[in-house]
Length: 201
Image (cartoon, rainbow, N blue to C red; front, side, top):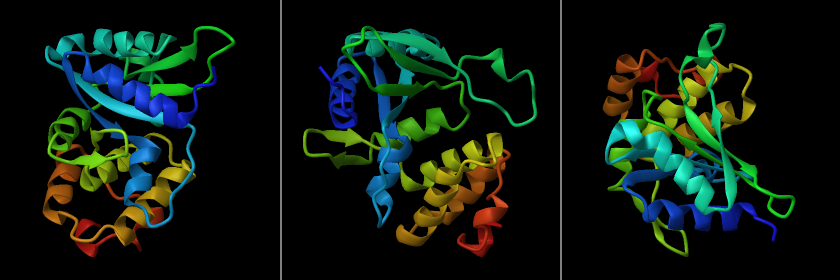
């Protein structure tokens, strides 16, 4: 059985909905919902906060197992900091057998933008055709992309997503983005400054 991105998306939503957590869709699939030009991504990305936050990793691992896959810990680099592997930032998936292919990443609340983004997403449910799914807001997705680029400046797809989010999403809550950029010690990447509202630069 081939686990396509769409099937992985459906199955992960179903699995997470049965677990004691709040979650939201993030990453490329979320970006495609806001961009005027949909982009292909094989990864299915979620963020998760368990009812007991300290159990978020265990809940994410349970979700990966419910897909018939093996959970693996993942780390997110922090630019030039070599001690980046001090905390598990995500649970990712490895095929349990040669019959399953696909990749699911579940980001954990140790990532600074995740808890508030997950909470706000509960009021931003989008009909994906198979369920009303909580999706990261465009404002929080901008913050997530800014952090991703700060960690890895050469991530072209994140820069492209940022350009499209600023161009394609009307009525962004600029005050919220500005406040959260300050709280998270983030900046708009120089490569997309020309696309961003000047008040964020």
